[in-house]
Length: 190
Ligand SMILES: [Zn+2]
Image (cartoon, rainbow, N blue to C red):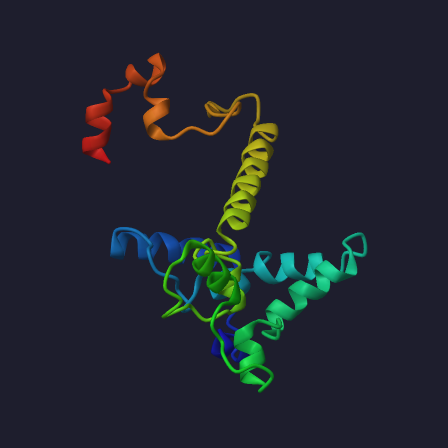
């Protein structure tokens, strides 16, 4: 991403769409980011990552502590064990939250993951798993409701799980889905 930033290689929206279509044809799907990481792709897209980031950081209605925390994440100086070890303030970069959970479960505390910002923001961290999963569900619910609210009257899209979350198995207990195909056929295609 740094190279792209140095060369001013921003991805304008039309170009990004064309690249996606081209790559999709070439690879039969897009399973890898174009610029090394998904974050880099988002940050380099016009009106996407940088735009949203700037909007959030300059929004005075958002408490300063929250904006500061995001600023630290972007700057890479969140006081995680990983960062504190790097600047000589801690002896080990191992995740302290994972250690607490493993000790409570009576499990081995060997091979703990490094406590980076990315790690503690993911469900991969045993100490943050419940919180991160709840945040994920809450964001998805917000997106789902927003898409439903923005739906045009002519749209044929049907939102089938507005009342509660469902998985394929519970959805296929419903008659209208069974009319599309059997659960066995669905499993085979999947
Ligand atoms: Zn952890």
